[in-house]
Length: 405
Image (tube, rainbow, N blue to C red; front, side):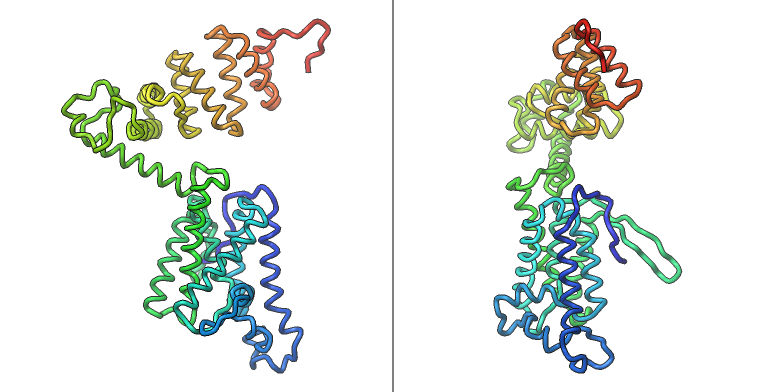
């Protein structure tokens, strides 16, 4: 199985990742061109000249500090180089895009240093290869982009296909394989402890980056997935105690409240109660129960007026409120969506819907004009934009002599 890419597009060229791949390739071929070919092993199985690279490998018995960096750019043979570079290309491009060039370079080198430290702590054998650095890259990738599909080229005799595997499962499978091989010793002379140390430091650094918010958070990063799992667990625990979120918190009987999990008080609007309502709303939307989702959303707003749901859920709830005739609440839900997700692909349509709400149902021409103008600016040419332009003309007629564009 060879990773050949991902389904996550990059916004800018990952030049630093390309440069790292180029340096690794150059460090493999150049030493053999600069020394006497007679010094190379018979058969050319090892294209690097030993007299050149031996000085830069990482030796466990007496490591020199700079060897923790140089060993990362040396490889034993072509298959070793190819395997590491393929993984670096598949996983590194997206991380280079997310972190920026210099932060990505520092993480690559730092991950390789930590992987080398772990390796020399368990083995005295000389070590070389970018596997530790690449393992750190995969660990960080799993934290920042756990649900991104990795494209794997798979072949088995006559069977050839491309599989899409979420990065989280692929990295965890690879980590489990390395642990098994390191314990049993069936994998041959491979620095499995460097692999394990690299993945673990990548995961740890990734969680720290998300916790400190050093890069923008994502709805599908590992901490977000863990948070939603925790909310679902709380929801199941609360419902198991007899609380029916679809009937509202005021109908919770005294005996049920006394049996609720420790620290949960539905009468005071605690974080546990809002978390349970959030999970219930998402479950109702996925279960095609929009009326129940809208009712729970109104209750959530009472507990937490600043509550905002995930983008698609927030939009579904706002549409349902408008469909039910709760125009004021729908307008507020759309406003919360625009404030929380200003770069969403649905922003232009939401501006149009909100403008129509204000002009047709709420009789508020000022906000209607603002949102309709935003819709006209953002929508592509077509019937929808023409509708926004006509409605805008009703609330904000052009001045005499003005040429409409």
